[in-house]
Image 1 (cartoon, helix red, strand yellow):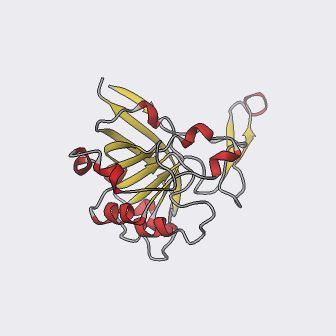
Image 2: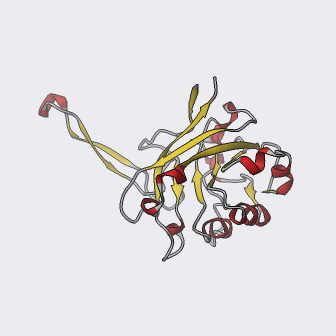
Length: 213
């Protein structure tokens, strides 16, 4: 068994969605002064590698803490979208063949995580189109994963793809993944465990790919 970390580390200088404050990490206690170390954390629920719940956009939407824990673990499949521009269509999914039906999480590898930390990370990334979003929601996938900052273009405040995916209450979105290029094209075990707090509209996750040796 081989485990890959697909998570960006939370830091005060990390990229955040435009209009939100970066996380603050400050020492609350130190070993030198108090005999133990403790850090005070302050960040938005959609910071870093994180998960969006239906409650993110719908007042009656399910929060992450109300999902069964099995929602966050399942068969994953990476779809290579590095040659796509604009929107990602059904042809990308169809290339996966029978593995598409077996997958519970579809992870869209665009290569954008290589731009993490630069202004280029926020612009020009390909997004899934409405047909793909409708397919994912209709067939009951547990979720999708992206190596980009959003399922919609940063400039689209209406968030139509988010809304289409989350409206059914069965699908979650994981954004800001990394290392998708190291997984390969076959099925694997995907795990993204969100921080559990009450009425969680979203939360940072530790995302992992568990691969057979």
